[in-house]
Amino acid sequence: MKALKISSVIWLILFILLAIFIMMRHVDGAGVVQTMPIKLINLAVLAVFALIVLVGHLIWLLIVRKRQNI
Image (cartoon, rainbow, N blue to C red; front, side, top):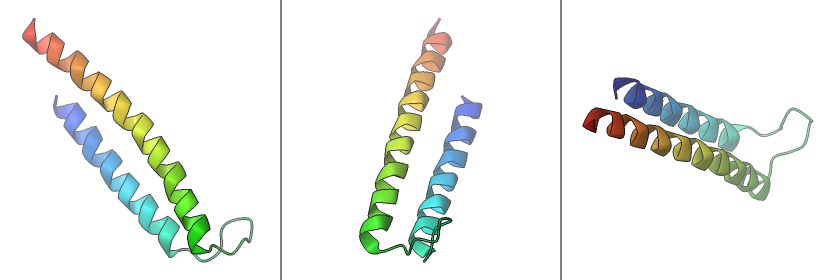
């Protein structure tokens, strides 16, 4: 359970840092100027990835709780 909490905090910090990075940059790696709609699309892609990670964490939580109940 401790590993689950630690990994959750790490993922949360990583998500926040990436969101700040996306909102603060003016030009991406390809040289395209980042307008607000493009930044919002990038945040949506990050959110979809975060949802996938969240589902994995919830599955992990269910497995850990079932093992503790046995």
